[in-house]
Image 1 (cartoon, helix red, strand yellow):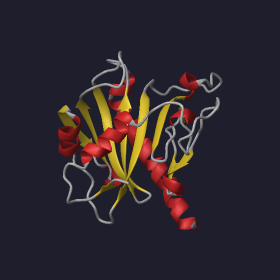
Image 2: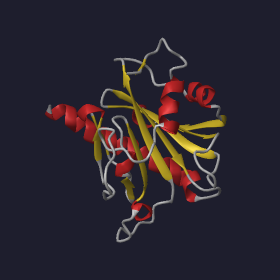
Image 3: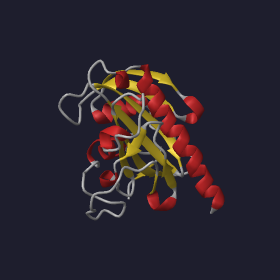
Image 4: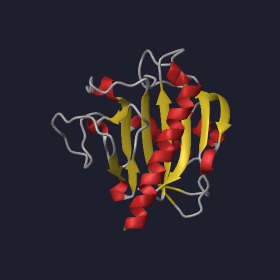
Length: 198
């Protein structure tokens, strides 16, 4: 298992590799193939340490789930047409790395160096999280290189959140920052409840 420590300035590379590459389809929470499942409103990852709660209008693709990874999209885009939402269309990912106590979050500059990002602009650091926008490689054709990223401590882990959308879409506007912030805040609140109940 990879652990983020302050002694490893390039461990951000591992964090970003997870975020960009670990979203393989066709895996369940345990990493084995699953049959068709309905999109989820929340999921527990990292051996019960982290509860992922998507922003309003978004659901988790159950086929994307791994022990420390989840991919989210608008619920209607994942096959729940009865869920009406005004949320921007986009693809959200959340990847987790076990963190040593007191280890600092990777800075936007560390993340940028590890992931080959440019035009980094830090926009906010709400409640100990860091959210920024940057230009970089895209996971699929038709997506904007400009995308939102966030890092935060959740359930004893460092969480890396990424949001992609189409060029000039609402997901790459300031609305995208709010989606990233909501995912972090809601997941952190639920995950804190998990640790309090154990």
